[in-house]
Image (tube, rainbow, N blue to C red; front, side, top):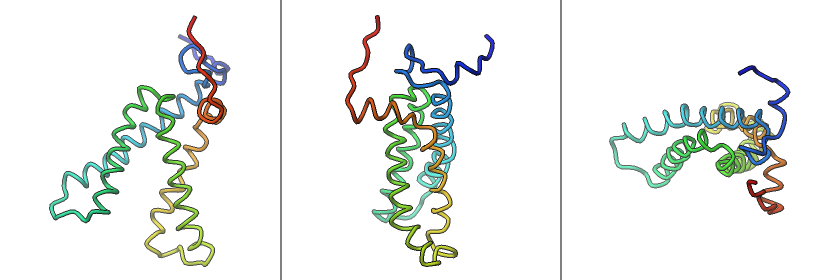
Length: 150
């Protein structure tokens, strides 16, 4: 099988509802990064935790562990798991606007407890780039019915 660069940018109606293969590869890369990095951190923290949990901390770690675990489904079915990335984009951008931006605009972000998370959350740009926004618009916002296979 030879690599055809042009085919990476053509919609794949047969397997991926018209999403370009380049987006499929980018989505799978994101799901892999989530599974490996977030999964390692969250599950290691959960499984090695020895003291009673604070409820809010436990909730955060549980959500991140579940999120990372669902990324495995994203590797297998990248288009079907786009809503997981939409959740990531929404919560990270919202947090950046609510927490990081006010601190940054007041020159208080550097050295604050939010600084590390801000740098981690700025990587959301990768998800924003990888998501096939035309597909999201057609499928989720306009409610276009899926084409039936012939």
